[in-house]
Length: 354
Image (tube, rainbow, N blue to C red; front, side):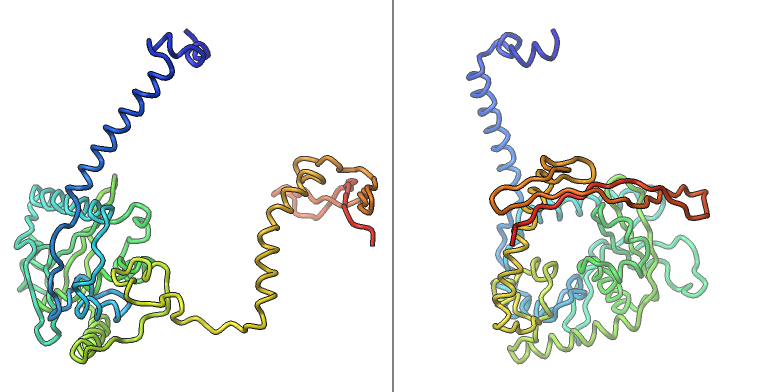
């Protein structure tokens, strides 16, 4: 039976009338929705907010907004819970880390002391390192270290090509990726270790193992940020927020408290410019419609319109067409001398008689 027969007589092939087929499809969709809902329910964060009023987390040290870090301590009870998509991302990251740890162990690089805690009390800083990676060789400049901190990160495939080096990560357009070096650098200073490693993984690609040497300039900037945060927390005050950024502010867990978001850093608009702004928006709204009408009446370079090449009058509307000779330059890549060919080009306009 041909595809055409199948499209015209599905009830004969499937043994059901169209109405029965629709009812079955609806019921199967309900089953699918139930499965997804149960999966979502298993990943809902039902834990009570954790009191972290006395500490800064190393994993948040690279956040670009100090006000966010102060909110994390003074307003920890009011943090927006993670949405279900975020829960799936965390789950995928944990799975990838587990497999990476297993793969490293299989080749003789067993990661030790997974999720080892550390703290720097004078900065009220605390965190956990993914583990300590054995070097399996003597590093001449650091011969006393047999293992060093390692951080494992799952990278979105869209960002894989832009995370080839630690320097590229430090300058990345994704603020959460830019913060990774601050996190590992804090572990290096807390453990007095001269270097560590990032191990990056994404879907369908081999991992990247990137060494990072302790960075004093980055540490100095992060310490200054922590001191600012700690001073505000002690005083119960908040620093000024960063100028509004869709990416940063749109992902902030305290966006509902930091209002008005979009006013931050914006210049005052002259109220006398309102008519011009309104006119601009009105013209912008009609610009697409104009291009569509022009294509239908006059045409485009690929297809003539209804009145292309025509002369006519309707009331006070004049359609005018004329021929103009132009020089066309179709210059092949291997021809150096300029040359051209003459060609008649039709020009059609539609105007109102003044």
